[in-house]
Image 1 (tube, helix red, strand yellow):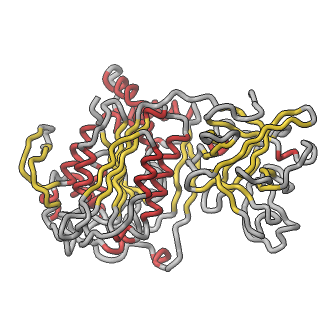
Image 2 (cartoon, rainbow, N blue to C red):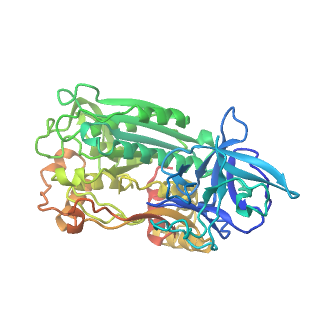
Image 3 (cartoon, rainbow, N blue to C red):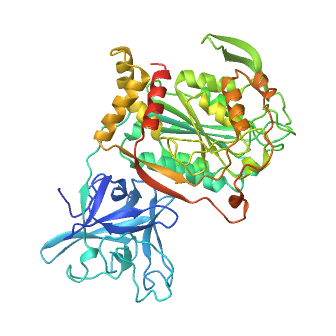
Length: 528
């Protein structure tokens, strides 16, 4: 390994203690932090994207490659003798000074919060045990093993051996195919409890992709469409479009400008947002993803009190896809099922991120199936068979607010040509292709990060039937008269108690055969 005394350019680095085989590693989850750990060269928890702050010497932002979390800190009276500690947060990084020193014949750097004097250290005893932060009254005499904390700057290496760091520049991986992501953000009043979390979720997805080193900056584009409703339900706007850009700062600014207000009746104009996304300026060669974030259904699926019970009121000539694959222009309202069919044929994958519990508690027709694992979305709720059937038309998924849904898409972009070659040239069927790829992935120890969340919903046979009805229907009109209402509250009893939340953790897992089968199915269904 080649180590350097300081970072010399923007890039992904591993940060090592000068004279010890220990590396700074992130501790993600509900109680985030940093620890010193034994080397794990393939682990993204030990990789950090360092970006020099413009116009400032030796000042950098530090972002975890694992989950896109930016480095911040906490300092209170009970955080390591009052010095505090750094930790990765779901948000942007603060500015950090990385200052080169030469002492005792060795050159290295110290890491400090910009403008402060105390630096990264690990004063606690212990080796590389996992650091678990819990409140201990006698914190002064019981330090946590291996936790990275702040401490005053020692002059000599021997006095502060774990204050001294060197840097290993991680080689850039071959960039993936271009990726276009269009976010559709519900900006109605019912979103108020979720709007900040939704914005943070979008920011984290963007940061994760930007920091992972898999995309050249110009190959990664983000767009945003905010939606509310039609008059008289809402008088502000129907949709606001922010076109694709690779300038993430402008995306963050657009997100920050959104407020949750208005909306009128329960259903909103998701149909208009989906239609605008379908017509967006997608690059032909890019992997195409739409992420819809909402806590309500669209107009026209049969909800009580729907001000536009036949669907969004804009009526115009629309592209209608028949079951045999042919298309014709017909006069109709905006129909999300038809739009999703078009997306699937164009290679646009739709994900719906559910804002719970509002969706489940309010709406009667649907029953969101939510996945705790990346390769199986099998949890039912009372509030949205519709969205599960909708996303299935594109090969997408319904996930919960906070989950990162793009692992499959990156794999599809990388392996689509290989899968098609095996199918067309080698005449292999989908099962054989999946098994071959899976064996290759296992041999290469391919892993991915996934959010693992407790199941909070009861299974429901009628809800699953409703999903199939929405998936197989060509239009809202065809499906809504067949849907049967699901009675009762399908949230597990323990999660109906106020304050009880799902437990969640981001874990690195070996890719599963089921996930490979999903990737192969998407590769084969996409237009070449």
